Length: 334
Ligand code: 5GP
Ligand code: MN
Image (tube, rainbow, N blue to C red; front, side):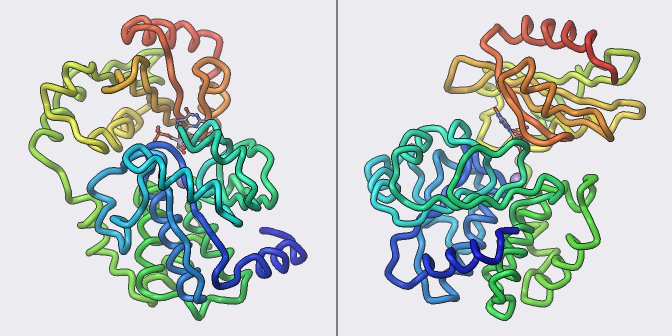
């Protein structure tokens, strides 16, 4: 948590009329959107207005969240997004650790005059004016709750805040399953339910959103899943043409990599996908126990993230990338 002195200083920054912007990472996920909107609703409950700016669009299954459709998507509203960041007095930076993770917002953030407040659970955060970084916590949404507690404002948590924070905790823990899910996580979840978050409605809004084409895409990749390294590593992939053929929509491949990790004996899963718009391969890594995919991705695939969930990139063609990946595994002790 921020120190008591920092909390006091933050408190003086959070006054009505201040220009406050909340930003989050490229390809926003449930935790990114949930923490941004949860914080926005909390500030609103304090009588302070803030704008959420995201670098690019986010999946339809997150747009049910209160005010999600008011998020400024910088790829569509570049000038508005730039002006907000440029003129901001305070910028909350949520669920990312480095300006390199926020697409076109990166340079704008670096040059902005605002006080920059980081709340994030990724490894190795870079320099910000105020830093609340904790890699043990499973979701930035949980950290927003701790921040509200530290500000002595728990009584302000309402249904809007609760729904947003519940969603991010649920998605970033894979439905309260991943290793960092703690008793604290569940205590906070219990509080959020008491404040109006409905688990069955939120789960259904977020996860019962399959389309037939998404299921066909899943069937395709599951049909050719490959297990290497003595059964310890699962490899999945999708080509750009396949994405087009199945009418891919943002978020359609969310969670696919976890099927690799669900195989008995598998300790690491990697999912390779040709980006639909840009000329690189996007990679998702997931792992179990002490297999550190953050380090692995930093070392070999210009990426990072968490110990058990990380992302990376490759500029080689898809199948070459997979071959390179298999070679890199040889040096690892899985
Ligand atoms: P995903 O596989 O779901 O895209 O990402 C898994 C985790 O790794 C997320 O927490 C995400 O923020 C992080 N991550 C994904 N891609 C990158 C990347 O290229 N660089 C870094 N540093 N982190 C990433
Ligand atoms: Mn997160």
